[in-house]
Amino acid sequence: MSDELAALVLSTRWLGRTHEHHAVIGSTNDRAAAWGEHGALVTADAQSLGRGRFGRPWHSPAGANLYASFVLRPPRADARWSALGLAVGVGLREGLARYCDDVALSWPNDLHVAGKKLGGILCEARWLGNTPTFVVGFGINVHARAWPPELAEIAVSLAEATGRAAPARAELLAGLLGALEPVLDAFAREGFAAVRERYEARCISLGQHVAVSEGDGSTRRRVLAVAIDDDGALLVRARSGAPLERIDAGVIEHERNRPA
Ligand code: BTN
Figure 1 (cartoon, helix red, strand yellow):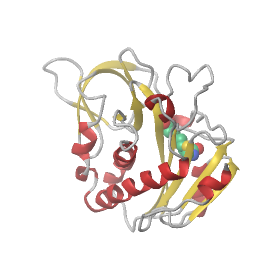
Figure 2: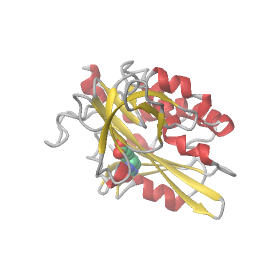
Figure 3: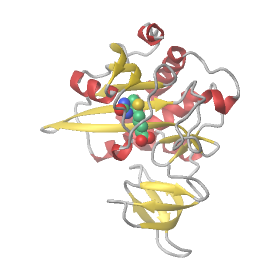
């Protein structure tokens, strides 16, 4: 099982050209951060301490799914890089579309099929003076068909979503990185504006009433999600006729669904 990802063959120019695979690791994000080389890729068959956004645990059983992290060290970065996770979502969704055209984006950077979570993205930044190191981790549910009770209603794998055997993880990962690299190049040159329309076209949150929690999550309010701006912020309207408000970071809950 380990050998499949260890023998990854890529067509990318720079993304994942150096690659380290682990049978088991705490979190691929932590290893990628310690490595710190631009473009370096870390994969694992299983994670013992896989984590999601807001420190939530990320279900990481052996061999079933993709757990991958890569490093970005742009020479300089400005506020526009706050939308990095959304741009990564565009690339991953387009890579996944080859296998399942129903994959959608839920703001800010979750991958969903029919309201269930197929994958998630965790971007972490460390700064040395003005120079950032970004670590982008993503988990994609690929072969899993059994879930712990707390995920049974909210998670889905590619195999479940398509009703077919999913591709081997190495083939899938190579395709995802191939789709992602040009998106990252465009993002580095032009910011999120380069892919914003592609994001909006596949974002299930837009046009929906959602419950949004910001900050410490203690307050939730119901708003209409209207658009995404060039910084990746969600533009919402609290009630008809009210001015648009920006939500820079937060958790949204779609009506009749669980948290995204
Ligand atoms: C989320 O939706 O909350 C983000 C989930 C990110 C999970 C991936 S799995 C590979 C990488 N290593 C981690 O510990 N987390 C990310």
